[in-house]
Length: 119
Image (cartoon, rainbow, N blue to C red; front, side, top):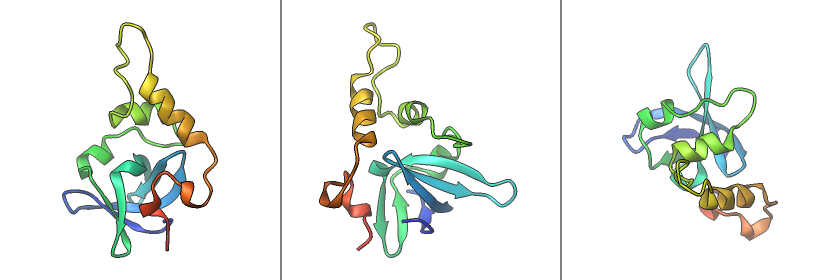
């Protein structure tokens, strides 16, 4: 996946994949300075030698930037993958499930998104 160009749902090129990390694709864009954003692997699929996203260019560019480390919680919440942080019991049940799954070691066919695995 690294090095693949990335196109959004509105057919705009937003950069290229530089890394896969904790269930997210890290996409680098821009010239100088370069910017990095994380997109959930659930929002991406490989097609004709590129990665296609199911989200818009604006959504990607307005997402939390990945500077020195990935803030999984912030990015997951941004893309709506977590429970409502204002929930009365204060739990992030679905988000905790995502976080524990994304940190589990992945081997062979047990990858959560096999469509992203290079053939």
